[in-house]
Image (tube, rainbow, N blue to C red; front, top):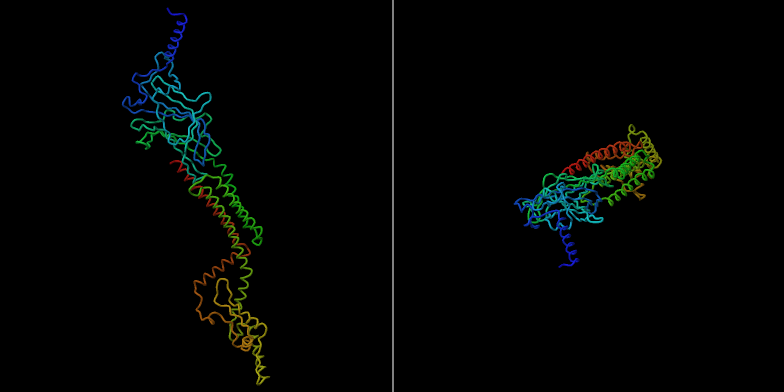
Length: 499
């Protein structure tokens, strides 16, 4: 006969076994094998459905090309070998199964190609669950923080639109065995999400593809459910921080066209300071922007603005050169050309009355000397004016853009000077045709020289004609460049976003 203590102990064990059996909410077939997929058990493909709840976009790392998300992922599949126990209340549509029981079921081997890292969220316990519905559907739910690798292209920065694909598929089951597709609804977002999750630099949105994708890796083709993460950059900050200041610098450089060219320090300070500011801005933007294989969109803009200011500085150099030519070289050239035009062997009284009078005086002096002296002949000196004109012939036909005459070397001997003074009739200002025997100047060269002289004189005009033309031409060119720039890059950005 059993003791009272033994009876109590037996009752407790029986109660515990009954409680354990009654608390079992699901049943499995006797021949259930968790290593065999539900579809293979029936001779069909296993359909797996994915659904996501995007709770938050944590960060976007452009240097590593990564995006961090907090998500709740739901995976659905049907397994007829598992069903709810008959003793469960019929009004319950599903039963919750503990996460420790997941080893008792077949679960899809979910593979995310772009997944860099994943950490299951937890507070008092891990945010995971398994749910069994009355229609033999199982659902696994996991709350996790994931890091997705995203291939980014920054050529259109800051007009770029980054589009990242995230593929959900099986690692070992090919498309002949398993099919992945999106559950309805495929994506769920918080109520305050709006048209996109807003970060300091990006507006992030999510879309899914209804058509199943196929990717090849491992042993064959695998069915894939694809989601796209679209990141559009906030352009307002770049317009205020880069585009607007650089445009203002270019407009400021146009102010140099209304400054008098003679005010060299003021005009040079304005242009050089503006040029250095743009160079500094370009260096700052280049260091703070992500790397790209080609010139980025904003770099093309800043380089173009720098070139506009540089061309304004180059225009001022041309104006200074023209002014210097106009003040110092052109007047000297005109004087020398007047002297060069006075070529004669015997002065022509009708053509040049002043020189004719000087020559007549020289002839009369020579005749008087011939009368007063019979045997001794003394050289007759030319009057001061004529002697000055003849001596200046050493630099006749001096031209900035070429000429027909050569500079005659200076005679330093007294004999040659006396010989020159004793021959008033043969005193001739030699030109290149008589001295060198060369032919006339070619027509093409003469035209080029005339055009070049006209352009230089136009640049050095005291009325500032070049500055007046530049004040109209530079703004027109900058407006045309701005229109072409924005139309081309915005169109390219939209095309890439729709691909």
